[in-house]
Image 1 (cartoon, rainbow, N blue to C red):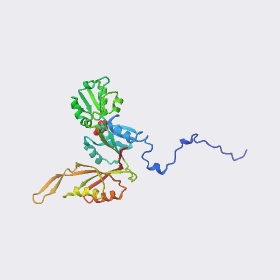
Image 2 (tube, rainbow, N blue to C red; image 1 turned 180 degrees about the vertical axis):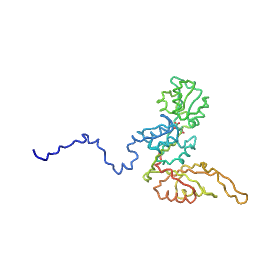
Image 3 (tube, helix red, strand yellow; image 1 turned 45 degrees about the vertical axis):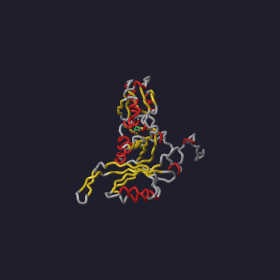
Image 4 (tube, rainbow, N blue to C red; image 1 turned 90 degrees about the vertical axis):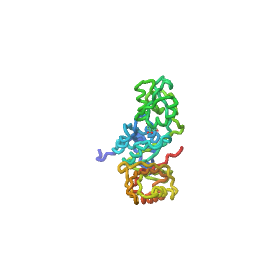
Length: 324
Ligand SMILES: O=C(O)C(=O)C[C@]1(C(=O)O)C=C[C@@H](O)C=C1
């Protein structure tokens, strides 16, 4: 017997396709890759519109229901989930102000926006007729979006934490005279009948959601991007005009401006010339502009803007949600 034995070939993997694939330069930057492991927190329970928005952005993601928006933010900050989703404005009800405040209070970055058409349904326990419904439960925003239709039907409005919780409450109560305003998805999950579809007052009812992440998205110029910022201004005549001019001068379109009182420092004392000092509210301005931070004109605009601001923060730079 020879000292050196010939080594037998070892079969590490019978199926070579099971071996991990080497990363390519593309996979480092691809956002449309495998989203099956992405966990996204949302406020509400399964069937809420926020969950639908998360699934719209990441069809294979795992959604994580949270009792409050704060919890949804904290879940992302504490690495329990990868991202959080947040409704920010609605085409009928306007801005969701509390959620603007949350963006500032937390350190998450906007990485995507989703415009979700919201078609509200009137739901009831199985076998009930629309005429039997005397009261409806839903999220206050959803109730506001259907106020005229509900008045026409003579139905009283009661608020719930979110639309899906409203559906769940109606299902578990078994009451025939109580309905819920929620989605088709919520009706299927909680076993309710759809008594009427599209009952919102405005046929084009769209809610804009933001997807938030611990890491910012690297801005690029390969497609139209939007940038969201928040700032407060120095005192003086025409300062807001000058602040907005930095975008106009560079042909940068603004798609949104929102002002909110500064919570920590609501009043500022302004020196009046002869008549003493005046008190005035101090505001934060939230602006969305249509440019990427990878563009020189956007960088120059923000540099210029800093001449007039006492505080500025970029909340995120992300691809615009385009009509498909
Ligand atoms: O209650 C839900 O299902 C939500 O996702 C919340 C919410 C909102 O806050 O505006 C989202 C979309 C609709 O506009 C109504 C309610």
